[in-house]
Length: 127
Ligand SMILES: [Zn+2]
Image 1 (cartoon, helix red, strand yellow):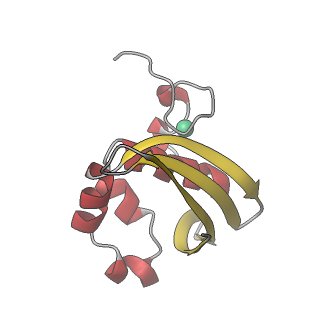
Image 2 (cartoon, rainbow, N blue to C red; image 1 turned 120 degrees about the vertical axis):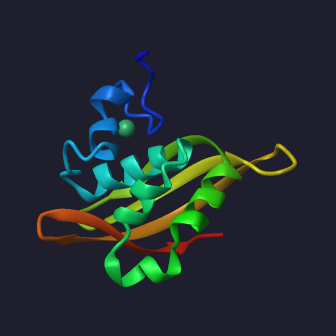
Image 3 (cartoon, helix red, strand yellow; image 1 turned 180 degrees about the horizontal axis):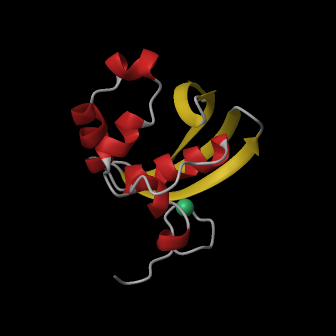
């Protein structure tokens, strides 16, 4: 497989960054690592990973097909981590809208560590 830069922008190759999480070879050690791997999963339209890393209490709001549609309909450009703490990550995700203009999704996401695994719970959006 070709070496590609990880979509999350870490500067590492995908194989040495988010891919082992996507393949369930490793679990993300921190909330930020999980957030980065979820961003990469959006870029690669890996809806299964997005669903599985959503907290069980929130899965009813996020079906696999909704994740797949969202991922396929958005051209993600770049991830910027604004702030990260134990269970909170604030980020800006840059993408192209349907008119090919750059827009920014600015979100503060909450994560929960359960049985040694991190899960996405919910997020607050900024204007
Ligand atoms: Zn990565």
